[in-house]
Image (cartoon, rainbow, N blue to C red; front, side):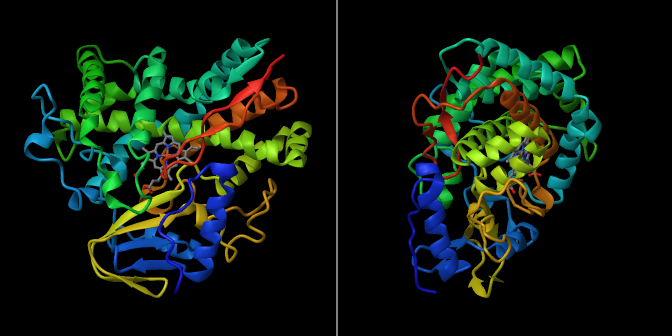
Length: 412
Ligand code: HEM
């Protein structure tokens, strides 16, 4: 227990190599690192990350306890209106028993049958986006493909206009960049900065306008079901309807966008894997699992201790934030043989990139299907992969992936 490097290199720099090396060094020294001076806890091991994620009684997701909702002036925007509280109704930051009830509600929108029913729609959207790229000299794949595909799917599922996708992307980028300068292990990063108040109100007005419309004229979409739903005999509050919809809208596209970009970068780095997939596209689902393991879109998971506990033999006090490196867990040599090798045939591949336990990603089947269809069709229609410029990574510690990725003549 010696090394206490508290500032990791930026996530996506040089394909994530410096960050992976930094994590490997820390993992060798400490599977769990508690730094008494900063009261910060970091987890590097697979077994320890898994243990944390499957024990919500000890490792809570209710960050409101540490960073309570803003009060007084901080709770009011410049125009005097109350600022929406993003913690209310947000599944990822809610503990049982409320979590179980809200999750049941949200999972009704994403049943295996509902997701399977989306296959032809996803194929149609993908085909349209690829057609729009045909013959262009250069295309930013994030803007032109990786973002609009999942945004269109989730917007249609929710019942908000897919044509507003550019605005949803800018909301997501603004929320991600709010974390830009933050320390990866700093609990304060989970607060939305006050300068974001105007943006929160804009998002709330937009979503609640659509919700009011659905109340008057219900349709076959999630928003209509949310405004009519009851939990414990009570309708959801306006604030919960807003947060659940926003959470699905953002969670429903950011990670899939990042996964698709990470796939291209990994395949560009591994020409043999790319050639194998072109020859046999049946390997695409396995390849995507390996991309998820190697470069998880969400490289960190945060929890808050509710009591004194021990993890990986290290004592951790109550009421501290634990930052668990999913990226490190996915490269833990005790779990994955030869973890630094990108192996699209790796099996089993029990990566933690969709989480683990009660908060396991509710949209995993949808994300997997979107990425499978997109990558398969892209490989069919795209000639050589030629990057016109180096892909531009996000610099926030909480996401791993690229915001811009320009290819030369991707589709003939
Ligand atoms: C490849 C794509 C995706 C990845 C890598 C991903 C990753 C994750 C991870 C790691 C978590 C767990 C967070 C935690 O433990 O605190 C999560 C939760 C969640 N994801 Fe995804 N996600 C993806 C796609 C989607 C999609 C398409 C949806 C769409 C509806 C979605 C909706 C959610 C929701 C609602 C939660 C919260 C679940 C809960 O707390 O009970 N995700 N996701």
